[in-house]
Length: 113
Length: 111
Image 1 (cartoon, rainbow over the protein chains, first blue to last red):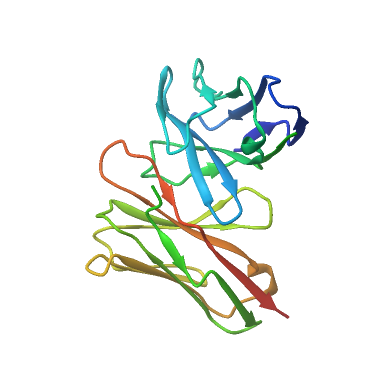
Image 2 (tube, each protein chain N blue to C red):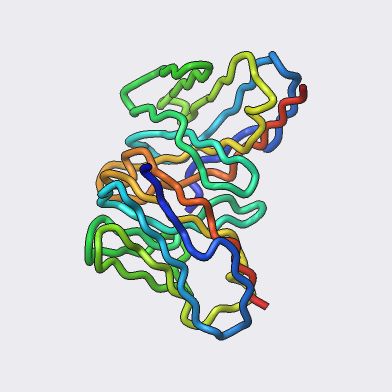
């Protein structure tokens, strides 16, 4: 089944404790991206990747890192999480960039205390 | 950089009625897409309309695009309770630019 998977789905952590949210897609998509969704603010893009070893900042990249060493994986790293990073995070992929249909993962609900 | 703005923010209708949601954007676009999100879940792609298209249909969905007014509308005909969800428009510009989402319209269809 074609899908985007994210892990973990739920995470409660403390300020400053490094964490990684994994994202994997099995559709051989070139383009992958991370969004955060907050009430009243909609979806905002954090980082995106046009292909392996190519990443670019989105609208809200501060406090996040990403890497794209393999085509299928695009992990999101929070080196020192803070409470303002409490949010619902989505990974998405598409065959080729923003011009094509995006496939979204199920989301990761992160709480930083 | 919010590009699309949906209107209304929330809409409540009876089952069987039609639902219309609007999206306005600020700058020239390449494509406009509509997505649906059930509460707390990932977004699901509904339809993509290119800047040189004016109307597109998919099942009970009808999307229009007016580039002169920088606006799009999503019409869901004969709505069902299962259509209850948030609906988002998303736009992209030519070149390797990111997809930018609006804040969404929350649709409630009452059985």
